Image (tube, rainbow over all chains, first blue to last red; front, side, top):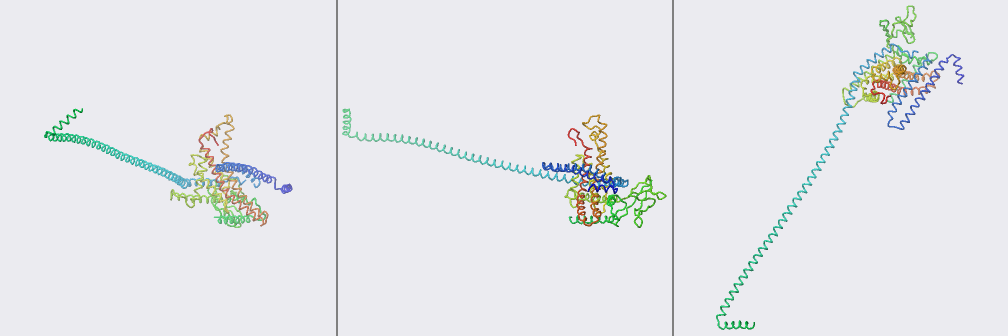
Length: 85
Length: 164
Length: 339
């Protein structure tokens, strides 16, 4: 099924670039999801362990997620540029 | 690539507008707002600390009052006790004095009575002597005026002498 | 309030859907439509047919040329050159004598009030009005409890002061408060305006975020103290012979921090717009009304998410700026714990 779509796309001249962009976007989402998921999980654990430090942990969590998000958005922008430019 | 190509017009207007807004807001909005917030926080802080201070002062005052009251109570007790003691003392001394006086008076009276008694006895004795002498004299006078009686008397004496 | 929000979103979804239809000429192409929506423009199209032509301002080799962008369109809404200038792919070019477009004509600077800039002016006017009103209220009744709009913004201002500035900059935070507050509210207001129906994608434009990032960079570099530069030119704990590698890396680090700020804001907001528009495009891609409820529901969900992202991105930008400023003015040395 997937192969058929792929072959059709290539045959129609949609370009492997767009395919790459799509796969790249998927990978970016995967990486960012893993990263932010780990941060979120660890933050939850720490808050459960030390509820009184919840505010500080939350701030640190948001900062770390923002950094990961920043990196993943670099990837998204690149994919976007490949796909539409 | 249009997406990530900066455009000169937007950069220009953004920079100019943002800096003007930054200046205007900093001067006319943030400064008074921050000042007001800080002032208010300071005034709240002051009010709180003043209330705390007043509370402490109040407590100190109350403690002082209580201390004074307790001292007064102690003083009163002390004075009362002293007064009672003094009263007791006075009564005691008065009693003692009275007793002493009484006993002294009694002794005196006894002495006087004794003296009087003695004097009276002496007097009585003297009077008795005088009286007996008198009586004896009168008897003697009457007895010896009669020769018979004299005889009898002499007889008596003689009897007595012989007997002894 | 709730009813108002519902109304707002139904309006939003409706107008967006209409905009979709408008773009649909023959075969529907989601890519160009979305790009058109997130890109800058010389006319502000609120809905199909309701549009505002914005002024074009050109600096042509020392000469200022201004005219309305409506001159670029004829009665049939086709693009035509005007006064020797032509609009092509969202750019304005000089047109040569023979009617040919000169792609690289030197000395032509385009300072037009575009859709984004007009939206920025609106947001700036809003900012000024709102905060002047608030400041006036603070002046009018000092020491009193906040009321109305004042009590809505006061916790935010206090949050920025206590949890962003004081926590990350330290005792010298006062100096940076105006910038942090301005940048926070500027980004937030523009994010929200961008979510309005027909709104411009201002904070999702790389030029805007680049300017903000450059200001952060300049402020950081100019407030850097001895400790900060010491860290860059003689990083403690690193052997001296490594300096040729460390110094360029550290110098690059100065640039990459604001660069990441720039890309983060731009990409977040743009991605949000693209996702919402894509969800609506699904209706037209499948050419079926059956998809509409699902697509609209997802779009509404994304809108709520974007409302949160609008605030979050403003917060992150302000927080990271504060952290960079804090790193620049940090006094204590490496030995006693450094982050």
